[in-house]
Length: 80
Image (tube, rainbow, N blue to C red; front, top):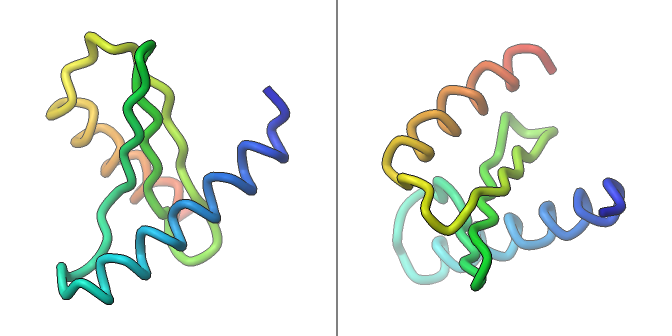
């Protein structure tokens, strides 16, 4: 995987998700979730300058993963 390419795709998808939740009056975007046959790609904003992208296997426990992602994104936003 090319990290620059992954970063650009993640930022674009998160931006599109943000616009969609605003246009559809769903509140504030928490995360974007993509599900493929071999697992998940989960993106979450981390402050205004960063995107946290997580790859998970198809058998991941999503509730626990979402909690860990939220904590990690908050911690990362304080570092940036």
